Image (tube, rainbow, N blue to C red; front, side, top):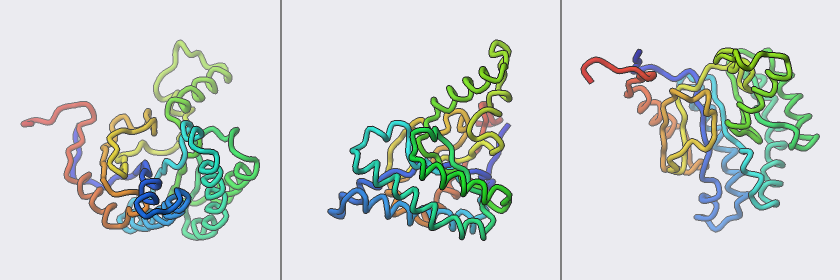
Length: 236
């Protein structure tokens, strides 16, 4: 099976480089994270204009708790502020918001804001924004298996569709394209089940500088590739 020249339905983005962006400008890392929030708006707008209406953003991993305490606190405050400031517009634009990851470690305030945003936008159909906070692909699979075991599923007979249905992303299409900024050549435990056959696009652009032109470049690269899904293409 092979496809070429198509538009991805679902894009996942590993947003990397906020700290480097700030350091290059002699600013605190918090300034880089705030600039990264602005880049999210630009990426969403560019994706929507291109016809891609499903985005998953890697905002905070299970490993990010090891960062300096002040930086973690800044990020969590930014998540709260962004939810408060952006939900109205996203809802008006018909975008459904989902947050994936382990929520127990998040503050009660952030959990409440997440739950409110999800409930308010649950019926929206024009777009899907999923934000991964305290997320790890391995943790997601472990949580899925634990959930299935707790519900009485016979794990000896476990199949892929059953496990997929227990993942945080149940109901979402698998990502067709994973974009990573800042030049790092790894997927960093992001959607490791769902992205099994996703195309990987890495750009040297730091996330706060990522704009419409960068997204269009990623889409052009994607359209030029032949997706094999584990098979072979005749004549190649």
